[in-house]
Each structure stands twice: as C-alpha cells, then as structure tokens.
Length: 115
Length: 113
Image 1: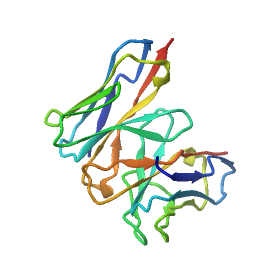
Image 2: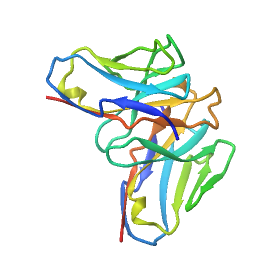
Image 3: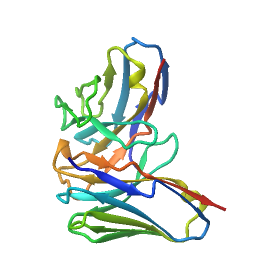
Image 4: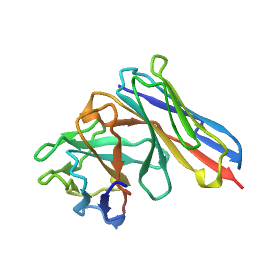
C-alpha cells in the first residue's frame, strides 16, 4: 500500500487568494509529479521533480509553482487563484531509476474551486 | 507528442459479462503501458503494468495485452461485477518529462446488477 497524502481534499476559495496544495509521501521516492485533471479529461503533467532542489515544468503550461526542499514533501502554490484554476490536482511519486517496471503511486487528489 | 486514445468513452454492461477496453498510442517508443482504475473522489490505483518487452500481464480477472509495434493495448475484464464500476485509464511512459505518464481520457464503466 502506497503512502502518499494530499491536503486539503477539497478547497473553495475566492479569486486572488494565494493557496498551497500539500503533497507528502513516506516511501522515500525521489521522483514526484503533479498532474491536473479537468472533468472528463485526461490527466496532464504540470510539474515534476527528480529529487531535492530539482523542479521542472511539465507538458501543460501552468501558473502554479512547486518546491522540493525535502524528499517527502512537494507542495504546489498558486500566488493568485483564478476561476480558470478550478480543477482536480493529483500528486504522484515513483520509486527507483528504472522507467520500465516501476509504477507511480497517486494521492487522493485535491479538488479546487475558485469563485 | 504522445497521444493516447481510449475507446469506448463509456460502457454499460450487465453483471457477469466479459468486456474489453481499448487503448491506442501514437509513439511506440514507450518504456511501459499501465492500466489504472479511478473511483470518484479518489486517486488512481494501478491495476497492471506491461513493460515494453512484454506482451501481456494478468491479475485475477484482469488481463492486459500490449502490441507495441501497432500502438495498441487491451484490458480484458472477465465475469464483471458491480464493484468493477469505475473509470479505467490507460497511460504510457516515454523518455520525456522525468518518465511521467501520458494518459488517455479513460473509459467510464458501469456494471449493473
């Protein structure tokens, strides 16, 4: 059983607020990812990290930022939330260096609604 | 850019039926293909992972096949049950973006009692 946690699970906020979505894993995985999923649509990669002090932008352009100060923690921040940021945000982590045989473990997601 | 397509988008079957979900991808240079299950309000659960050198994987009532050269995979579910109702996602791993997953939109499955 994978141990990856996301908080909050649901968030309703007003436009212009700064928010941070938390993601933590206790498995010691180096690689971590943030995906964004709109209803009925596929997940899109918005950020990833190879390890501590490593952050990269994903395929989908996003106004959010991430940090990786500790192995187990990969928070995502929106400096000024807008209605267009309304979506589900899923965090994932992956063990090891082999891309062939290792799956990603996903957190339960954060559903964000910006009014 | 990798494109992953899943057919059908939605499927409703009576309990006990066998069913097949389809997935296709445009770039055959993949490391693996995975099938996930997504339940409403929850994250993704990995069902099966097929490495690029493999042809199929089985877990219980689930069997997934991979034809890398033609860019296709199928997920076979035997003797479906109402508890199988969920969205099934197909995803492939390429070499870009830290070995992140490229997902299809999913197949929404409803198994009726």
